[in-house]
Length: 89
Image 1: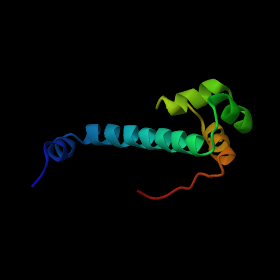
Image 2: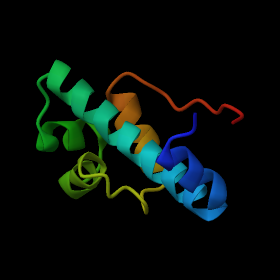
Image 3: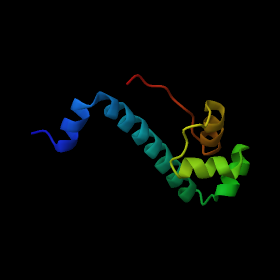
Image 4: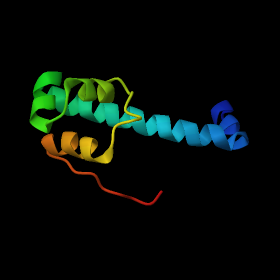
């Protein structure tokens, strides 16, 4: 049995793309928040460690990471001990 959400996404492919993009942003934000909490890092300390401005970290935390480039994201993740991996969807 399909849920209302499943039906909506199936019937509206553009909404499916939008949902996937926003969900990935949500996952990134939650990941960074969790790692910051585990390592007791503040926005300022992570920004300094990654060599970026605190505004960048705040944007990632608030799911507003649309305009953050690869190099910046990579620096933030590397400073947390992670790297970006590409996977076919």
